[in-house]
Image 1 (tube, rainbow, N blue to C red):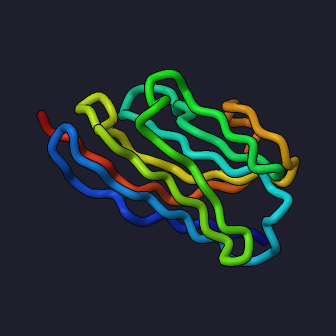
Image 2 (image 1 turned 120 degrees about the horizontal axis):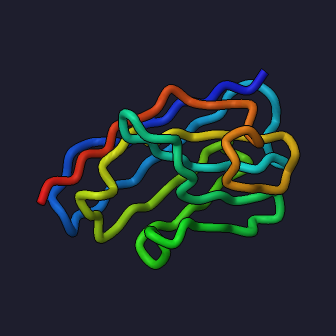
Length: 123
């Protein structure tokens, strides 16, 4: 049973950077699809970035060129480097995993979710 734990959230000023990490425990995850999502209260959860079993990545348009997703299969760690942060990046960020290997931004694709880590960007 895979369990995911996020860390690294916090408060920064616009233009700053944060690194989010997601540690997986339980079964091996080398063949998994991993994703980062974010959610603002009252809004639907939004896909931010994903990396599939072949390390093919995808980003939502609003973060392209600013965020970078990576993974370490041996350590079972997923990372999201966030640079040039904007106030509109403020949200709860969630790590997710799917055993299906290839990725989409559909939340229903993912069966494992972390508890979330808050990112707040002030102007």
